[in-house]
Length: 455
Image 1: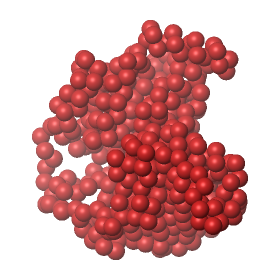
Image 2: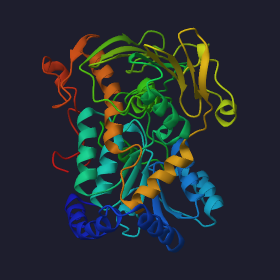
Image 3: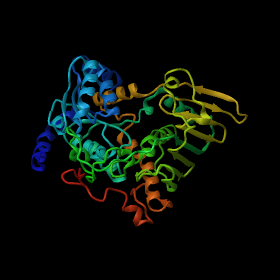
């Protein structure tokens, strides 16, 4: 679609978007009225969903949405058509009918019957894909990390608010009951005053094995896949996660779950005043340009957050599925994805994705605990509930921005020489570093895939 046609499409759909906004983002009504509205909507209407990006996570989300009786997954979109067969099979098995496949996601944006999209693309497509969807009147479930830069995250918020769309981020622990129980315990004061928070993302990744540049495979629209990023040479074996042009990096892409969960249980504090970073590419020297080691310190008004991330530790283990699904706890000492809350009265271990939590008192006695379960299903439920009711979702776009902002701060501090930076949360800039300010956004977008200043 040409830029002129795209403008015509957006103008034509703004009226429809306003009508949808009035229905989906209506003024507050009583709980009883909301319940009645939702029951009627669930009984008589299916939410029509399209999926943008059908890699592993995208296919999993497409299947989860398709498994719901109140959802019809109508579209699967991916520049790589080789992914279509498996994703289509999974969705058809889940919902009993096929979804259309298109390489170009704009085909589903053109369909006014589509209510929402799932954006499970690589990081560099999160912002523009979400903004275009909002402009087309679609609600958005966008995967984490929410944005490729601080500036892009703010533009996503502006689009969600301007077009009155529900935009939620795939930080599903926010919808898990055990996480809400941890937040309630923190609020109760049983830990005392929390002065130190330690967040970990320590594990082992393999080295990537780069081939020689070559033409993209048949069926893969590499130009569309690169989208707003530079069109780097196609190199087999190069992981987009390890490539800064496309990714926030493999450590931030995973650690944002723990950083967000820490923010959630602390009551979602605003951005920190400073960030200090040390780290770099120390072990996995395999052609990547994102760190394999990141240690960051964030200073807040009343507490300090210490973050440790690394990709070369074989003894640190992610929380196993068995633990997530049963009444078990991780081996906290070697848990790769844990959070530690240190208060003046007590200490909490907290695990993401169903890891649960345990609290110890001043005598090292276990005083409270809560088993966990993954938050995927309740997170999707919350998204759909908010589309129908008009409320803000548990992982609203603003919170998604504030959480990945911590990752961006660490990355920027690394890129300017492993230094300490002062950050102004109001302007979302670095008052004392013009060099850091140049890293607030992508230096150049590749036409026509430009994130506009005015969304």
